[in-house]
Figure 1 (cartoon, rainbow, N blue to C red):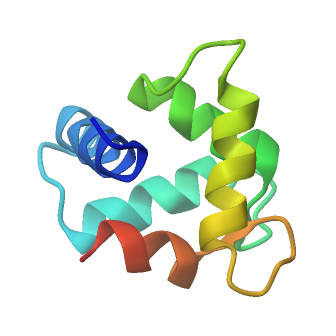
Figure 2 (figure 1 turned 30 degrees about the horizontal axis):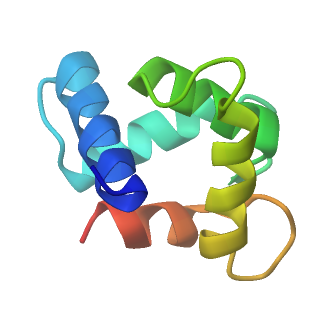
Length: 92
């Protein structure tokens, strides 16, 4: 499975497991829950928790996943995913 496909599939499966649905409202609720410091962004440590909960990577590879995701999706290059970055990929 391609990394992008795996990310989208596993995060959507996590939404279904936690919320019973994978719509934009469930995505927003999850984003807000994972944004533990309430910065309005998912910082690397918070993104790693999303990946762990979704079953993506393992302790050895999860850091590389985070770096790769931020490199591809962080539109303003602030080393975090905004709601627009996050939802733009997963809500499509």
